[in-house]
Image (cartoon, rainbow, N blue to C red):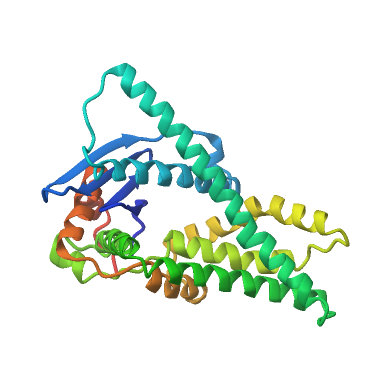
Length: 306
């Protein structure tokens, strides 16, 4: 398999695909047509994107912001009146309002993530400390509890009808990338028979963050709970950077060890991806073709596909 460098995510009734500084959001509108909106990101030329570990943190933050932005943009097409033409002044006010809403949403999400995935597992391990003396075992219990919470969360949201459709578009995104990277012509038939699992998926990244944190947090030992939690919080970006490097490596490598280490993330993708219908696949294809010349990529790498 040849690494293409493209990636994406599912949005409301659509798919976002990213290639370098360019990204496109393709959405299936209520009238059955596909709307494609192509944009550029900023800062991709920054040196931070070339430094190992650091680039993982920067990419993670950028992905969070872009994810929220594209979700809000896609949701706008399904408001009662849909997107409408605006004057420059109206657009400026709307952009300011959207930025404020996105900032608040991100802050609330970060706080909730800290409470659910950091504080709750830590204090659960403190309770277990009444019965377990080994600090290493307590750290392991804390990590397993954190992973269990994450899997339970994914299972819970996967039951929601809207999320089921998002996960179907997530499957379409993966299938389109796999189709290209295996040297197949990008069409509905070939995409349909491609895998809905991909080693560079954000689901795999998040799970690997949790797995790495289990190991790292075993070595963080302070008598003060405040110092314990503060140190854990400060190490999250480092853990994210390490996890990003592995996912990036896994996406390019066919090494057997890497394949084994990738298995848990691929298994979890069975929960966050579903088989898309042909209409969803068409949306994924439209998103890819807006930012990526897959024919040129395959011509230049003919013979490198497996």
